[in-house]
Image (cartoon, rainbow, N blue to C red):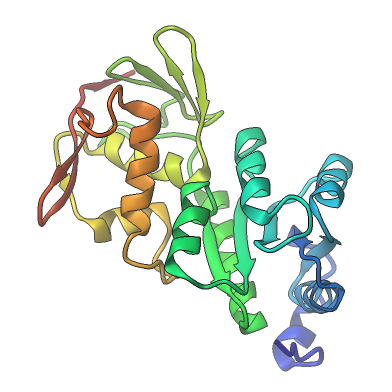
Length: 258
C-alpha cells in the first residue's frame, strides 16, 4: 500500500471545508494507521486511529464516528472479537481489513456483522470508494419499510411473533426480548418484509443488502440469511419464515402488518 498524498483526486478533496464523515482506523501497524489517516483526510474523511481494542473503545467513548475500519490481526482482542462487541453495542458500520484473505475468514467476519471485507495488500483509493459506498447506502436509507405503493414509512412492522422497530432497527419478540440488527441484516429483513410471499433471487437481495458498488463474494447473502434465521427462527435448521427455494433464491413466508 503506497498512498499518493498529492494525487489530483486527493488535492481536490483537500479543499473541502467540512468533513463528510469520521472514520476510526483500528490497526496495530503504526505506519498503516498514519498513511490511512492522512489519505482519508484528503477525501474529506476525518480519520482517527487506535492500535488495539482498548484504544478503540476509548476513541468511541470520546467522539462520534460514522464507520470503523477494523484489522483482524490485533494484539489482545482480535478483530473478530471486537467486531462482535461492536455489533452487540451499536449498528456502527464495520469494514474488516486484514492480511488474511481466506474465504473462511471472510465468512466469519460477515457472520459477525461486518459490512464489508478487504484483504491486504489493497489500493487506498478502493478503500475510500468502499467506505463512501457503505456510508452512502446507510445515509440514504429510509427509517423503515413502507407498505408497497403508499410511499409512507413504517415505524413498527409486525410479522409472525416479531415486531420490527424501523427507527431503532431492533427486533422485539412477543415476550419482550430485544434483538439488535446490523445494517446489512436490517436491509435484508426490510427487503423480505416489502415482498412477503415472493421468491427473491440472491442477486436481488445483494442489491438491497450490500449494494452493487461492492463486489461481494458468492456466499455473502447466504451468510446474511443464516444470521437472520439464527435470530428469527425457533429452529434455524428447519426455517419457517425464510425458506430456501432451490435454484431460485429465498421466500419470506409470513403475514406482514403494522
